[in-house]
Image (cartoon, rainbow over all chains, first blue to last red; front, side):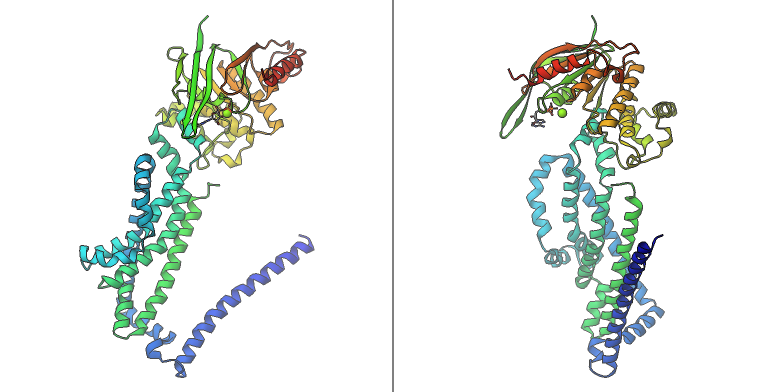
Length: 263
Length: 250
Ligand SMILES: Nc1ncnc2c1ncn2[C@@H]1O[C@H](COP(=O)(O)OP(=O)(O)O)[C@@H](O)[C@H]1O
Ligand SMILES: [Mg+2]
């Protein structure tokens, strides 16, 4: 390795180290300032909570397992609605791709439903479905499913006409075009839709839990703010930070594994 | 004479909101078993449309396309269109998979073909690991595995660079010769048409009609291959003849 390459690598490492150090420092600074200002009375810990209070309520809730229960509820609601969104989205996109007249007819409805703020629907779901998990799932699914359908449908549509011609010259039917071309060819698109949706369904679940839940992190946030237990609220928010990051990383890993062979 | 393919007074138009585009008008020709026929014509004149009609992907407005009883047509497109997510082996097997013909037996056949055409080491490779020439050969195997009697080739070499194109066209010509296939080749490369074909059909501008039919007879003492054909004494004359037909706008 020659000198200029060595210098380049050294500089690259130096830069990376600076970035990492500052990232950690920023977090420490923030947590330290928060803790310090609540300790000295600059901020009221009763309203702003504090890192140490969050930690101790986490430990005590870990002991009686209640935090695991709430996390489990939120996570399972998120996973269920996530899979429902992906499944329904793919199925609807296939139906629209299969029948272009139907797609043309439904197009304006999909656009309206997609741009409608779904939070507005949540109270309606409570009235229709009751104060239970069904409402939460429907709310979460409704947040993401229309966008998913539209994105996947347009991705299905953009398949190279010549590749479709290839399948037909080999004697393939529309079903073959779907199974041999459209679905396998759109795996990267499906995964990128998943990446967006894992976050969106979490948002939907939390909204649902705000309104209609007896458990879950969203419930804990609402409950905590009502009884002025801000430790619960902030603890839930911190946990949500971790959960959303972990879910995103999970999908990124899936992406790495599944899209190796796509250009 | 028994004809493998007879096209009679064929006409076809595309329709869109902006109007009708008449693409083919009164095309008639026929191809004998074992013959290699090339079509040259201005781009956009309707050559690909003709192949789609022969392959029954489109239905003619009028006229008829008669294929000898029980014979099959294979189609090779301009690009190889190998699917990124399949290995060479699976790409090549795509046609048989679609036609539900995959058995132990056919895997042996696939192996044999890959072996014969220099792809056996790349059986598990993805398309992006293959060179342009290898990809085109894989596409040809994919078509040949369905055992077509008539092979339609739609500018199959135009995506390749010149060097590769010469060797791949030589390769593919030999493969077709060995398998005793009948072929209809579309090309915009006059030399390619003369070097490969027994007969050249020159198409006019859209709506395409057959302007001239030129049988190609070359003197090749070392046996006729596309490569040797290029150095035949008559080559230049044929070139000028086809060139004149293509550029003569009457
Ligand atoms: N699906 C289509 N709809 C309308 N016009 C088309 C369509 N496909 C091809 N054409 C037109 O028909 C003409 C002939 O096309 P094509 O057969 O592909 O020409 P070639 O292969 O000789 O270059 C072109 O002018 C093209 O614009
Ligand atoms: Mg063409």
